[in-house]
Length: 181
Image (cartoon, rainbow, N blue to C red; front, top):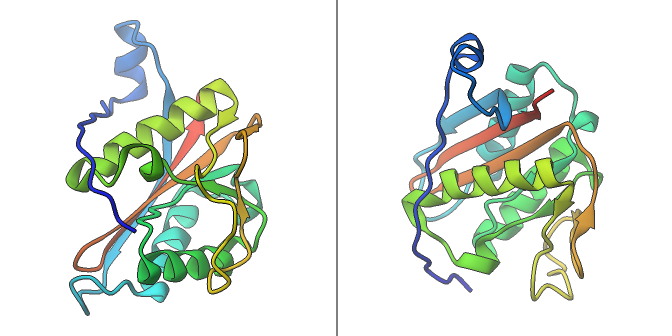
């Protein structure tokens, strides 16, 4: 079930030329994003608009689903949310993209979760290690057959990651970050 967490996070977005001119350390590039809202129910997620947010992000980034190396799911640990999100993800990526969430480590930080999860995902991409879904030993049979990272996590060098947030009220956002080189 859902556990509330507490925290804060900030991502500083800056034009490439400006960052280089001031000698900034660049952690990743925002490659694309997709956002929409369905507004049909305050807490009942809509699989089709979740899927569309991910598709819009891929279109914005100009990449194909098979180029995605990792996805940080919204992963609220609610029956309605996880089932809908897993099926939306499967419709876009099949079962090929490794997925996990950090909410099982820190809880749902509500308004802060987007920034915290984006930063954590970027850092995992930079380190080449992706955290597992802790305490997940058996996937709900109602969820889609995704590549859920379990156990000790996973080492992988990837170039693109996606961080999803599907909020109360049907606000859906998918961000794609690219490894900076």
